[in-house]
Image 1 (cartoon, rainbow, N blue to C red):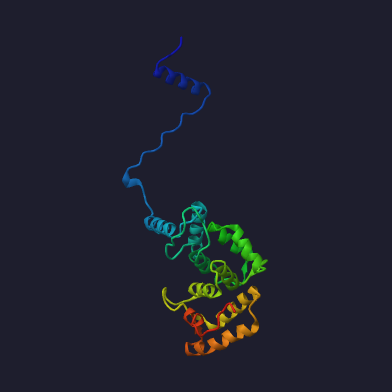
Image 2: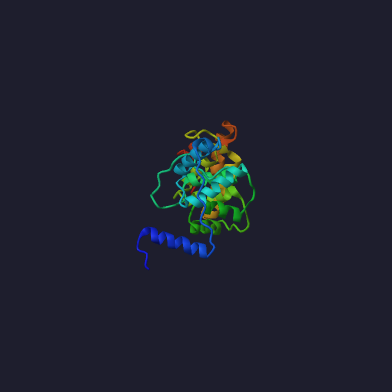
Length: 240
């Protein structure tokens, strides 16, 4: 006879399971609130993670999350912006904030393996084409001078060498945010000379004229230089 009721179908299902000797699924245990143990640090970890994700706005949340918790576990700087940046939705592009993230992660390593830079870059969901452009422009192959890479990346964000060097100073400085953004004069000379060489249109004579002007400023400021010095109207233009 055909069983048409719901209970009949259920009984037939039990019979089939019995014939196949398949065990019935066990019921999940029921817990009361007193039995559930929440690690004391979990709420703060999740709170900090959420704030970091909102501030950084990663393109690939899962990829970024893995990098975030890997960094926390290793005791290294996580890929987190210090402040929110207003960028177009659904477009992951290189920004000052993301370059600063990479600087905090890589500045203690010199030279930096090219593969490490690539890994950090992709963890931030940045376009590989832009990375390839910078690596080609700087002729970076295996080991990379981080300051050279950073300064070259800054030139891709600005149209003028003065603005690019300003960006370099803002990322490298130890001054408080909004301060004079000074960096050691020796480092400024190294990076400006490097970018001028990459540019190819700035003569050594002009580079020396910039340094001649800035030498006096650096001497008055404990050998530190900031954008206010090299963007002054009396300073020879960095772009030649």
